[in-house]
View 1 (tube, one colour):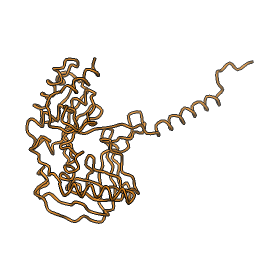
View 2: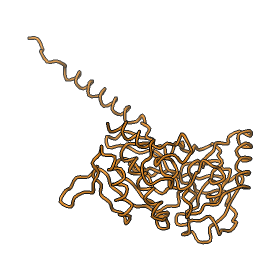
View 3: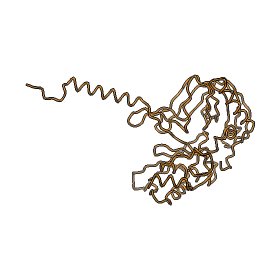
View 4: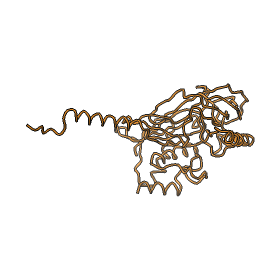
Length: 196
Length: 125
């Protein structure tokens, strides 16, 4: 008697295995989602970026130390070796918004850097890469000029908008450092009372 | 768009509601107490990150770090900006000029400008 089943048991097992495999591949290939924040000052003006920042330095990313896989706002932390300091101050009263008054401090040889963005999973389980304000995630092994705010409660340096500039080779590093040093010389301190 | 405000900045939220509602295409109102449906949640956070607010996937977060010292104008500007995102309008960050409410930097305006209105009507015809 002819077997009128559409597929044999083995055939169905193969179909299920293929579907599961396809699903695993699909959820593992990250989709990219852009998230934007509203800036309190014009960070595209490097004088204002440096004026706002507590620390600006050349850093080589050693390793990724922590990932917070929040559905909406994942964040990622890195250990960064400090190679060259362009600016390093500490606000006398961290609760005050304005950049001044502050005092000069020295940076340790390595710091924890926090960056918005990272990897999370959506409700279907699919891997999602969240890019915050168009700023790609820092990559271990690469060198950047980093403009950061200091978080006294968490003892880390947070990457500000427009505050991560790749500086891998000597030419790129010289150019970026020169630009940030000129901005530091003409920096515009942040004033909370100003509209922007 | 039905919103649920958990923040202490109800005045700025009401302003954002009314300034976008005046454009007429989207019905915006706070969640009635007898309803369990809403699609925008407004919360607070506190971090020295250079952002007065942010929006993603149906949630606005307002940054107390700045709002605590902001004047009324800047609060309204920030919340109205975020409402624009919640309505599906992106930042005008290709032009770093103070020309629109959805300009990347908050503080220029507290209501939609011509560029914002065009984006709004393109989105909600």
